[in-house]
Length: 116
Image 1 (cartoon, rainbow, N blue to C red):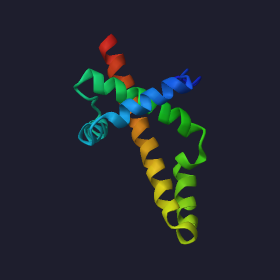
Image 2: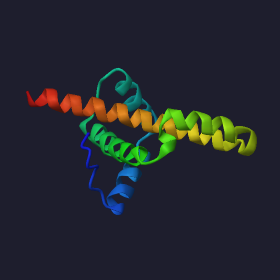
Image 3: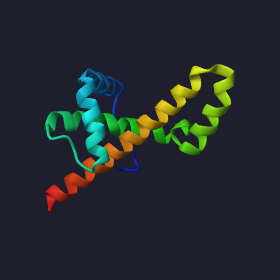
């Protein structure tokens, strides 16, 4: 991924978020499963939506310490007895960023192979 980060405006970010969450849950799960298998979604439109969403998630996640397991897990353990639901939200955030990293990696690998 480009280290400079994506150049999204806030409006573009919101539009991508809306398109991603507008996909049926089945398709979002399929994107996740396929990324674990090292494949992109066969529908080019879904694959592009997933990639754009993932780029934003990774970009934001790199700037948020809770996206790193070394911070997310202890934070979740500490906040669990204090705040209850906060721990689950922290772990879900970490898992979402991890999935986004997989989607970005698989998509960029696929694009490089297609250029050969």
